[in-house]
Length: 263
Ligand code: NAI
Image 1 (cartoon, rainbow, N blue to C red):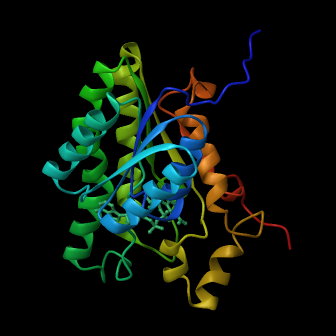
Image 2: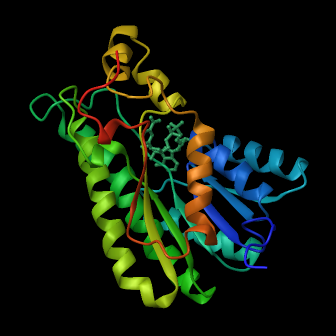
Image 3: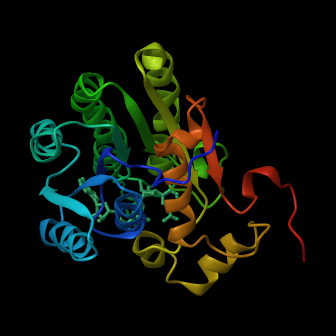
């Protein structure tokens, strides 16, 4: 039979950053349900431990590790903890990211907002790849999923300049990593969500006017559910996307394809 009905991540080991909450936590549950052993990594140590405990109570395999992705030693420790707990690394899901409230246009945005956003969103992906890729090569290859955003593809007049710049960088880095490692069994793709109903966005768009101004540009007329992104991440993590690398998977309700939206 050409299509086997098995759990799609059976025997795989996944490291997911920023997995204490939001999309990362849901992906941790889904990946574990699909047979992966999951390392739940986050600088929210208690939150990460709670997600791992939930997965264990559901009969899955998981462990947790604390750490800040903007710190080299922490990224190394996350990878070491994963290999130590589960014997290898096949899926590196670089999901941790921040969007700071004071991130605005180039004139008003402070340098420290720019620097912190770069450190977490862009350098964090670089550092996790720096330490994760050798572990993946030693494990026979696998899949890297870097979370970018639809703003890596288009500009917004209601800006978050630092955030947008980091996501463009994540997309460029994704393509290059894909090209470098394509013959060594590592695929690397970017997941580009549109607006998703997670704490990150709820906090930023608590102002109804600000929310309405954005939702009007989404052809589907709503935010994504975090589950919809977890399913897209599963596609990229699994062999279902085995001939796909260096791509940007937009899961955006049609934003990037549309010039106008229905009334
Ligand atoms: P969230 O804020 O709900 O969760 C992010 C998680 O990352 C939290 O558990 C947080 O503790 C952790 N984290 C933050 N900084 C960290 C650091 N330095 N080291 C380790 N962990 C850290 O965010 P959400 O919405 O689930 O976002 C996940 C990813 O998706 C991010 O990269 C975000 O930029 C991206 N994204 C989100 C969109 C949205 O509308 N929510 C849209 C497009 C992209």
